Image 1: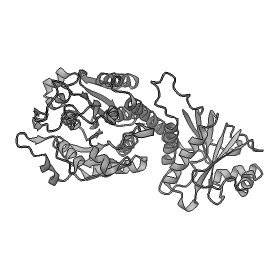
Image 2: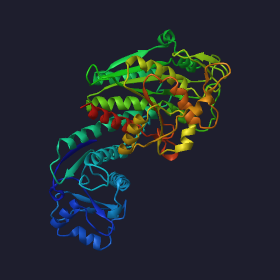
Image 3: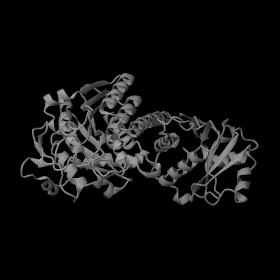
Image 4: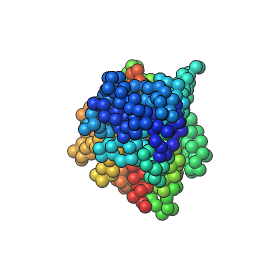
Length: 496
């Protein structure tokens, strides 16, 4: 989908469809008011007849208005003027694109950037328009023998009353890059485990590196063995697919600038190992690599945006399968950091591959490390599918990520990381055990990771509830690419 932004008046815009807003009670949004005057008040007449109430989410398509260059005018209800906020803006966008995709329109001109949204600026509105359009057009049926027809809508113009400045153009460019990154994350997440293996992820990282001139390094199991990554390797013992440790380096900042390192969990399929998961919904464990997918999507977006920042991706990738060679409950392994771990549950494997990757991340002398993982079912119970769990060893970093999530509509919620929880990981036989019991499961998982991150600023995003949807709408969401990219945009701006 192509996006552009320019100053234009809705009545003069040649397009298959011009989209305008109407508030509840019949109040026309500014652009709709301008068109209504040119069209001899035909919109006002339509409202007076009761054909458009302005109720939030309602839509009415009007054809061939006199004095209007566009073939169609789509009116979208905005709700009550005094209640028009970010949520109503997003609801309006979903209604808009749902209506447009039911038509044969190949292009549309949207006049939404001039709407006042409490607490939100022009950049936010541009960002959400682009991401909502991309979300509405996404299809995950590339493996079907007969994929569904792609939506007719190909081009979207964002019409403005005033000439858009460089900030608006930058916002449009960045939003398009984020949309591309989310698409990559969704495509990878939706692939089945027989296609998206650790080797496949490594190949996609190489393609990404070639396309954007990134440095890529792929460590094989023998390399990990030499580094002492026995915790990571314990997870892959039962699989016929070799594990990979993937790193990508984007150097957009000064050579002396310390990088932000993103560590993405890349379990391409998680059966639970010897601690086998129940069969129901086990197919969704193909999504256990969504942390890795979101990191690759973020790297693509960062490269497309050309951020003046140094960013490194570290992706530990393996399968977790039952086999005669698989790790057993009660086994003890030594991590790259030299700490020993008693494996009480082989289904708590994400932390076992992440701890070695977090130790490895220190060699990049990072300013900040953020790991992203579909780590615990306990986080789904706590926060559902609305917010990702956010843990950090520094409150300022937690605030930065929280604010990035609020702004990007990719919310995260800070959870406790208190010392009182650490004792749940005590082991009689090793330095720690890999689970802390049922109570506070997402917290003790984060506490486990925190033991390997004492040398740098670190945050952990548990995306088990937000990375994909189940049921009728089953599919990868592309989260938290918007949160991560917004955080990095903020970091790049701060560097200036």
